[in-house]
Image (cartoon, rainbow over all chains, first blue to last red; front, side, top):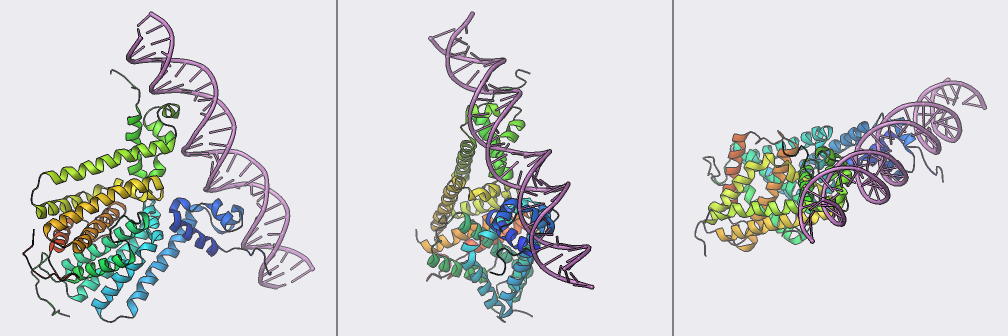
Amino acid sequence: MTSRRRRLSAHDWAEAALEALGTGGVAAVAIEPLAVRLGTTKGSFYAHYANREALVSAALTLWEQRSTEAAISTLETEPDPEARLRRLLTQAARRAGQNLSETNIMASAGHEPVAAVVRRVMQRRVQYLVSLFEQVGFPRTEAVHRAALAHTAYVGLIEMMARLPGALPIDSPGATAGYVESVVALLLHRTGGGDPQEKPEGLLP
Amino acid sequence: MTSRRRRLSAHDWAEAALEALGTGGVAAVAIEPLAVRLGTTKGSFYAHYANREALVSAALTLWEQRSTEAAISTLETEPDPEARLRRLLTQAARRAGQNLSETNIMASAGHEPVAAVVRRVMQRRVQYLVSLFEQVGFPRTEAVHRAALAHTAYVGLIEMMARLPGALPIDSPGATAGYVESVVALLLHRTGGGDPQEKPEGLLP
DNA sequence: TCACGACAATACGGTACCGTATGAATACGC
DNA sequence: GCGTATTCATACGGTACCGTATTGTCGTGA
């Protein structure tokens, strides 16, 4: 054994803090418990960070980076916007059950520093959704509406699946798949939803 | 002034606890702060409840009662199921911005006693939505899908509006109204959404 | 009317955490 | 290898809360 207990870096603490944040919200980012978990003492912590706030902030930065990276990686492969949208929604829904961490982070948005980061991430996602719906051919306001619907439905879904498993009648893996199918079809369906648009396929570049 | 400081009942404590629960989640249901807020001391609290858990439980009971009462009252007046659905969704969305309390209670569902109550309330709502969509003429699975979509969209909407005001591009009162219109239209629109259903209007009783 | 039970005030000990202080252990440039 | 900076351990004081104990006060019904 080279080092029975290697020394820790600020990054190690941020990583542990992010995990705690996803597990129990901002309240769970507590120095002393984290120190125990990392096999050290809080004396060490204050060598890396000025205070608890700084640690929370570092964890959030980590989360923001990964959230945007993940969003980008999903985008890369598929050229067709409709297929892209379809894939995005399907994948998001499939991972919904495991996303307790995202839900917990969002729940910590009562804390303003958390809210600022979460707001950025969410706004980016919604904007991206809007652009996809526009690329698929919906006019601006309709695209905004559908993006908002898709996004809020996603947020509500992870909230329900993570916190209240079994409460939705679509909770079994099979039923979820059918549900997602149905929602995607509805979201992509052209209809006179408020704008004078009824054209079935043709879209202007 | 008849009583500068009247004596308190268990109900007064439960009421205050419910407000705290809606304001800061289950963590905010703390006896000493509540005592201050009620103008008394915690010595009094333990005359009414065995411990903090019992108080949380009492507050949740209050919430559950009111939640179901509210749901019922919306139902009474309108006979036509489609109009009823329309009204329900519209009203829910309009109140979305103020529903921080519901969001906070839901966020406390990490606490299992809270989760049990919230699950009941949510299941009731979804079931009611399913029944409305069935009455409107959708077959069972399609009704389940649309109910789930409506409900998750609602949960996501209050979450976003309450915690991250301004993050959605439909946040101004006018824009919200347009959004709701659009969503209601989409949810009520007949389409081959996964079931062999393509008939445009006619529905069997 | 007055005793008893319901409510209230205060004090206490306990837990979990934050942040500081101080000194010891370790890594690393030279 | 030696000195300095980084990292770690421990002890301390402070805050916010839970729950108990003790004793005081009030209101109401027999």
